[in-house]
Amino acid sequence: MATFERGAKRRKYSLYDIFELAKLCYKHKKQYEKEAAALPKRWDQKRKTWNQPKPKEGFLAKAVREAFPELSRTPNNNKEFQSAKMLAMRALHEYEK
Image 1 (cartoon, rainbow, N blue to C red):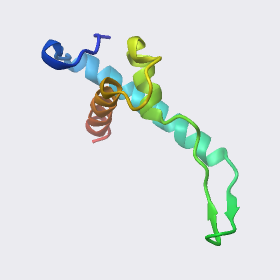
Image 2: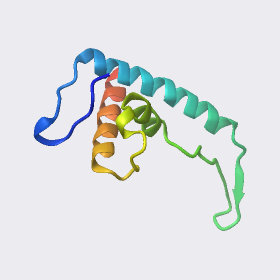
Image 3: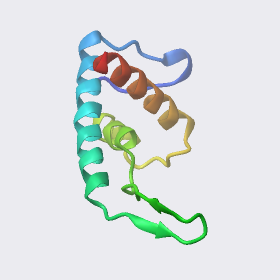
């Protein structure tokens, strides 16, 4: 997959690259939903409701780390990582349509 760069050097992605990223996000989303459903519900005493816990890492972050190896070690709040996550979210939204 093409490398991800910010600013004036930003590279335009081909539709094939974006489609592959969307397929990867969709695969991780289905896995995330399956893992979330498998976790047991917990009773929240303060709010008097049942809560469904979520897995540790989100599916978008997991897909971005897999698709862009140079971002695999960057923290989640990095600007470049957030831009890549937004690209993945837009690609997934179009793929699900």
